[in-house]
Length: 246
Image (tube, rainbow, N blue to C red):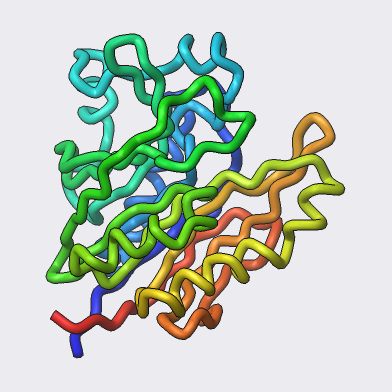
């Protein structure tokens, strides 16, 4: 049995402020790097905000082949952990809810959210489930609502991963947030038990416009148990030594 130190950030919500999001990411990456973290996860839509209204999403969407995106990569650390960062992507006019994987300022790959909520009609669904690797630990990505679908986690398991990385954004109306408060980890735990995989989630926290986000940012074991979690409603960094079989 070997292990890799992984981490997830529970962050404030940044909306249409890429500069502030990048500054926060760089500061968090430096903190994680000082603790020996190899893999660092940020929330769904972290870079531009979880914007589901099409005009807003198009205004800030990034083509990952563009010079503008290249400038984003230039601002990310050239040392420290591999990072998974949620963003709004555009390709040939189509929008995607995407998580990119970046290592030392270089784009390693991307995952596009495959299962979309009714409020996410501005986006196109992805259909690939790439596997990534850091220090021998293989992982795949399910973005937030993806974890409600057993097949999303099963694809990752069948490709030999040991870990599900789950960028999320659960900024909801307060009544809805209260209803789902205990359900996020319960659903994710089912995926862990079905596949035998670890899971690490990253979420936003805070309040705006009658909405609230509590998290959770947590690590779940292959038995579906919460083995580490940040306090709800507080930004922070969750660091965990994740065991795996090479």
